[in-house]
Image (cartoon, rainbow, N blue to C red; front, side):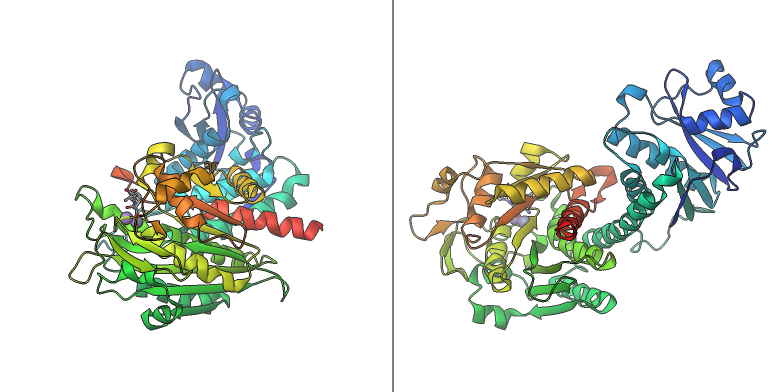
Length: 500
Ligand code: BES
Ligand code: MN
Ligand code: ZN
């Protein structure tokens, strides 16, 4: 989609369709009021008659209004003005974009981006509008032989701001929105692919392609190299599969030469059957999304490169398939991690932490400013937090605060859980240094407690995205989260650097 910024007045727009909002109880937004005046009270009349009540999600398409240059005016209901916040704004933009796409107008001009909102400036509103527009029109149909094409799909969308003084900020927000949207689409395409296509080798290939496109550095370690490094917890997960494991390392260098990098580690289980601790069959297909963490960190490097952020970044992706089989790891097997700590694998379905712990040790060689791992790690996180926020745990409160703030700023929110030493008790093993499961209680925390044992040498945070990375049911598919959160975290780091 082609986006642009505009500060013109609504009645003068030469476009297929102008979109303005109306609140409940006949309250016109400022742009709707301007149209109303140009059209001699047309909208006010219509609302008085009850043809449009302004209920959230409602729309009314008007043709050839007197005094209005555009062919059509689309009214979008915004609900009660007092209750109009971020979610309502995003829903209104989605409704507008969906409708514009259906009516076959090719281009549209959105005045919803003018709507005032507490603490959200024009840059925020435009950035979000670009993300929501891209999200609304996203389809994953590359594996369908017949695509359900729209006759004249929406191709061009202009976002309006009320004042000329807001133009620069809006352009800025739009540039970021474009980069984040493109990266979320990249993540979704990867995560939506089935496990027979998106294998560890496929993920490695994608990283190499990204490197070529964006002038990054890609490196991929195979089984033999990982054996030499002593990554036996990672290899233990991969050994039941015919797909060879890959350790993908992608680097972006936008900062000074000697500056410490932010290291992002993404769980790349391309399919998680559970291994010998086999999962039940219901919904097992969704375990193709178990590489969402991997896709999100690759996508975040893409976004950073597109925005040319003045930072050094490393993405590390341990990529494996978790399968049962004659050579698979048995419950009770004990292996030595790259850190030297021995792990008793009591449940082969707790595989994410086994590949991440070796990746966290590998991260040490980059002398990181901080390390953030991203993983669809625990079903317990879905029980605790649902599909609204990602779980966040960290060994440094400053880093946790930065990530929580980034989540708020990008409306891709996270919630912190306590990572207290007391939880280590649950990971004790009779036979090894630690066990890979900690019982039913506090499953998300004990998973992070396990990882923390391998993240002692740097500031570290962990995002559990089991509930937020994808949707189930009729709308099944990747959400592109937490690319907005991670990108905002980097944007904020880049901004404080400039201020210094
Ligand atoms: N990939 C799963 C976690 C998961 C479950 C993500 C459901 C999304 C939806 C992970 O590898 C896993 O199987 N975790 C186990 C851990 C348990 C054995 C300690 C779980 O959550 O059941
Ligand atoms: Mn598992
Ligand atoms: Zn898993």
